[in-house]
Length: 139
Image (cartoon, rainbow, N blue to C red; front, side, top):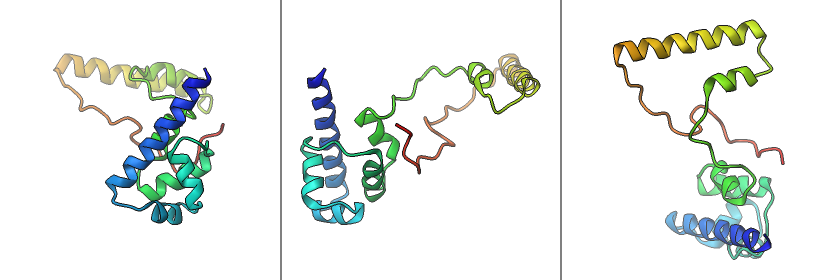
């Protein structure tokens, strides 16, 4: 178990280093942009330090990549599931009334039936589309 965690932090550090190199950014520059010290960032890249979600967010902003990608690599977030059931998600949404949930499900199912009858194939949606990753997740 400990080896798995150590490997995850090592992989995260390597990924940050790769992204920094792709962006042709020095360690010093990334540290300045992320608001962390050079030694601390170096330790993160070598897998020796475990940054908080907030620090990962700062690094992601500086690298101009999604915070979510770093959270997933750090194990803070689970990878997105490729099998999301919209009906289950609608039923789970407690911010809607029961009648609103039923209406949404009826509308969703009618769109699906219509597309099946007409042979319409919808374009795939990118994971996380419409979501923002500005705030670190609650851990």
